[in-house]
Length: 425
Image 1: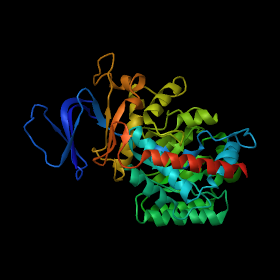
Image 2: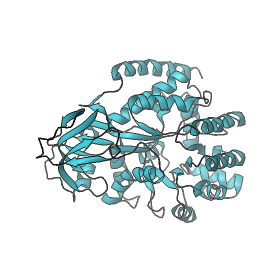
Image 3: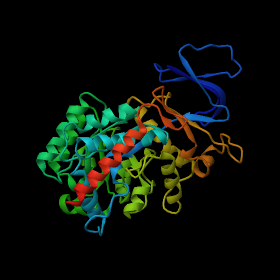
Image 4: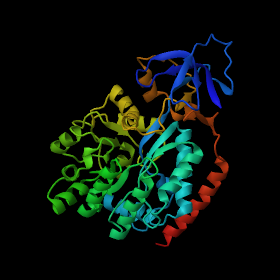
């Protein structure tokens, strides 16, 4: 069924131009059609009408870097040994958790993440997955869960040598099998857990499948220390020499501890950077600074949450005094994920991905001050409806595609099971 968003205030996400129109959304067309509100006599067959009087409508958001597998960690107890640094945070928390993931836990995590993304206005997610003892078929499990909810996606498996070369090989095999049937990326964890052999295999696979590498880069200074000790070069230099950054589909996540030469290499490459400031603050690894990295910077959540409006505010406010960020550049980072997806020919992020905001402001909202309203007023609490691929997946703040209560009930059950397993290790 098609949709007609009646009497909306449509905001063009590229130009921020305002149009007081009705919006026709066809399921078989990635574009939308703006229609005059005074044309009430026109009848559109097989079309659901949604009254958007007094509401703002704009392109739905997208997450530039996520970890759906972290969904069941919220509220989890402290690890048996308290981490003293970032490496131990990975070892005692995340690498302990990901080793326990099975089919049910992966599926539940993906369903919960997709639902939260939808409720928070994101119709597309770029995800980075790890489950070293359930590698084969894991990406298809996630894809199916995202499809059930109605959220488009770009997935990868986080290949790493940290659990041995056999499991690293399984990660690349899973990647190859999935990418032969679906759009996706070649995932790697980080330089300090990836050998030259695995790195070279991943880059070859990237070229064979016309894809890009999705990898964490210099999230912590240890990544640089390890790279200099083991390979005699810095992380970005190593990745550049290996060919990782030759693809415009490559995503370099974090990029905190870079020197001027590395920043120049990033800026002069077609690769993209994904900023995740809240995760950086939580892990106490430093502040992001986009200086010298070029314009290809987008925002992610790193699995902390699924709220891109919250991520936008965090990037802007944490960047004060630490980053070269302004109203305009903050908004560009929020929306650059669409440039990344569209420029690389990925599907699922068409103009028929829309978000409806019921925002009653105390001051006028115009093209000139809309970003200010995003930063200081509009939040995900104002989202009432979300359209993904022309399909209404959130209606009056409720998911339309899945039984939300049943999934959340199962999620609590699976989380308790996961926590109990972890407590035994």
